[in-house]
Length: 214
Image (cartoon, rainbow, N blue to C red; front, side, top):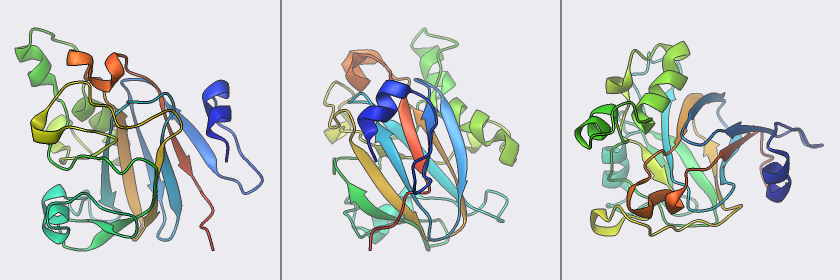
């Protein structure tokens, strides 16, 4: 699977093994469904781009969801290593981390949200919470207040340092295996202060149907 080809084409494509790629535009969101046992990747196409990621167990009316609190509890506060799990608020594994080319992520920050930008004097600024809510509207989400705290992929923020400490490079990715049928949503984070996200918000890619390695 060639990630430089994704970057150059900037379109959906299929390979012989039939993975499918969706380009998530800079500062926008995307939702997708995966079945138990399926693999997918979140890819940083241009580098230093944080991805807010959330997930819900199908058939629970969005009640059972990926929980950073439960995941922190199960992993003793440390972000998951390859072979470890992200957990739901029902204390069940929802996703297994099977590949990770970066190994620096965040489990503490909420998604950026409309009121945060309003208080900064930037009303109307796009936000991760609104991006995820928009993407999840077809699945019954009402507004950004229903968005759960995300797993912030590629986010390097030690001691709440919201500044340019990017961890990912072009083509870096994480790969998950679904432990349950679930609905996932992500946002190419629009936060652009202090050089965060490399100072320029960029597209990301979601690749579903990734073949599991033997």
